Length: 100
Image (cartoon, rainbow, N blue to C red; front, side, top):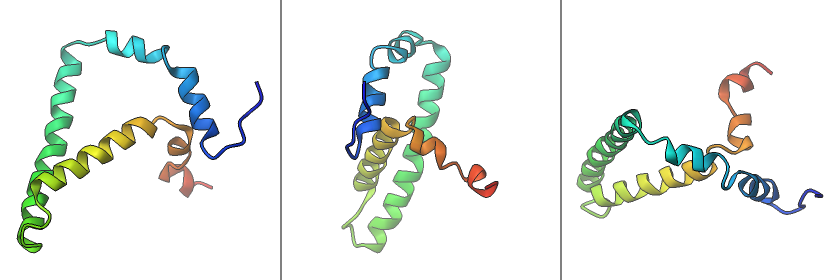
């Protein structure tokens, strides 16, 4: 098929090609290590969000607090999870940029 000439054409084509292939394999490979890593990443993201949320609450007089920081952290994590495996993220690796 011919490549799409739209803004997100390559991302859409990549998603269409990978749906139902490696995601099925990854979802059935659910073991103890997966649970341990998930809990580690969860707490590694939650602890700083709550800490900085408390600092922001103090500085902004409770305009931005821990709940807002948790929501922002979650949305950023979801966005990165959706586009993190795309070629543009891999091409912008800082170590490769320094070697050019």
